[in-house]
Amino acid sequence: MNVSDTGEFGFIDAIKLNTLSDETTVVKGIGDDCAVYRATPEYDQLITTDMMVRGIHFSEQTTAPFDVGYRLGTANISDIAAMGGIPRQAVVAVAMPVDTDLGYMSALFDGLKEVCHAYKVNLIGGDTVTTTGPLTLSVTLVGEVPKGEAVLRSGAQPGDLVVVSNTIGNSAAGLALLLAQIKGFNFCKRAHQRPEPQIKLGQWLRQQGATALNDISDGLSSELWDIAQVSQVAIIIDEARVPLHEETYKLAASLQTNPVDYALYGGEDFQLVFTAPKSLESSLQDLDGITIIGEVIEGTPSVQAITKDKTIRTLDGKGYNHFHE
Ligand code: ADP
Ligand code: MG
Image 1 (tube, rainbow, N blue to C red):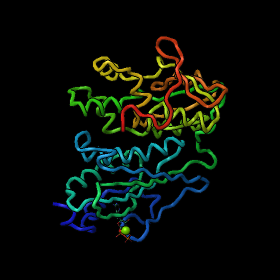
Image 2: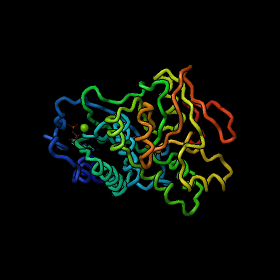
Image 3: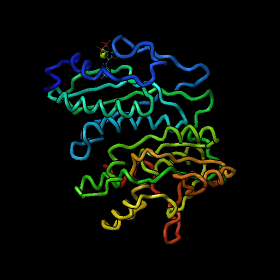
């Protein structure tokens, strides 16, 4: 059945069940002119939006409809993680061709709802239209953070440590594997299809006093350049310390590519990169899934890397991307 058979209201009926995770903050969800939600007193409100277009941000070839929805949710929730915040309320706007399969859209919404439930996000409204262009989805997400405590990109100080979570580059490696239809490597493929936002870690970092925080959506190099430019500092990292998954090393060896490039120029890992005062060094070193990769220094904003053969190179900044067009 196509969405043209059900119409806008049939579509909304099909997706409106099971949309609330935390009813205590919702006065009215789907079904009125606006949704009504309650903000927490003494909290600042965060708002972010992220859009995905079929053929540009996802394709049939590499991503099942459930995973398209999941990744759309993650991209938004990850922005809240990157402020040290708590994700709360989402609305989703959909523009779809009239011949879109209703089953495809239901599966996509199941994926979106799954990640929303996992991070206690309520889906409280949206808009639905048809288009002569490709399927396009846009989520707007509201989050909260204790007043004045949002962790910006601008607070990195010379002397701070540069730190990342878990392993980086998995998603780019996963995409390369899916496009080349290589068997196995299920960890990286899953990291591409169903990335997890780092909500708990973001809140913990805010409480610990991280000085700058960013989620890795456009590649580690680009995110570091962001921090360097808005904080007006230079950053130096040691490439050998960038944590990669063993599957990424294996893939790079078989394709004769430089494994660290998947982390530096890949993107959509939705891991966190942050700076923190040196006084936190010992508590950070004790944590699983946290790796210190470099240091903030004084200087003209730039990102340098110590390479494997101990030379120093300046990393490519924003807009340069080895893995996407
Ligand atoms: P209005 O005409 O007042 O904009 P709509 O008929 O567009 O209302 O939508 C009816 C209800 O369904 C509203 O609560 C709206 O938020 C919700 N809704 C519409 N499209 C979506 C969607 N894609 N996802 C979630 N909720 C939606
Ligand atoms: Mg409407």
